[in-house]
Length: 433
Image: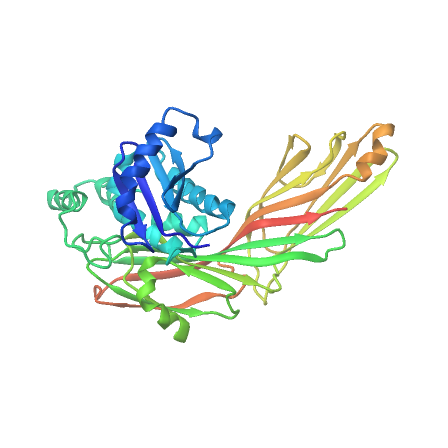
């Protein structure tokens, strides 16, 4: 699927952002598009209309929200549903990034919106469509809001610092490659911190066989360095990444990562996710065992969970914020419960076991009984019983992806550098029957 042009208009016809991939004069047709939009769609419920306008040999599919129109120009046969999925993706990103939904707010962030559009399309072909990646590019206010949070909120703010922020907000600063995400004149605390966060997506059947097993990871940097430092982050990457995407600050030197597994970049100020990756075909061993048991007898359903902490690669870890949600079929009633730790909350067709911490070398047991009427019992046995787990494990890397070393060039002589690993549950499900 290839488009000629992507554009964003205000409801008064002003062009807020656009990218032309084919047809140099396509932008000149947007006033005609806007005229037809006003005549045919303004004042109507666009959701009930077929949102496409034809002008000569081109089609202009579009979506709207608040006072914004997001559209495309196409001159060849394309999958219509795929195109609208891309337009709605852009719409969702703007909605989540700019809750006020105003064209004025978009004008203030026109550069980051343009970068986002460049990331979505490559010569008119949709390339990057991961919503979380695109949202990280277009964060409202970008660097301005980050610095306002970190500096304006402090006591004894120097007038020069506030004046500098105003200068950037007014668009008077010089434009450089890193100007969208970094303000170089503000003095930082000379600290840079990295988090390597991995989300575990696992689904197991009733026999413990693995149906889904993969890791989605991200590398976050919290940069409070002055000037224009260049960072070199050396990755210890035991497993091959099946896929990865990067923040714009890494694009110019992405070949350094390809050759040497080193991330080289001028860091954004504040906290930013700079790298996303996916690993499939990996055997995931979390630092705990979850052993379920399901029994049916005499119109009763007895379920028992045994949760045991265990070492991984010779190292033991505390598991924090542990939750287990048991979903049961409609028609059962919770009866007796036996629990050594945590709290139990009854939900609709489910119970939530808030365990808290799973300490090293510890084990915890939960036993619950559900009852059902005799005429419903056979139906209930055919229903779905499943458990979803939520947890956090600090200092743990399931894939053994770690930051070995961070070098800072053009930075202060004395600075703080730290990196840590965090593992979290993604979609983690155990099916009991």
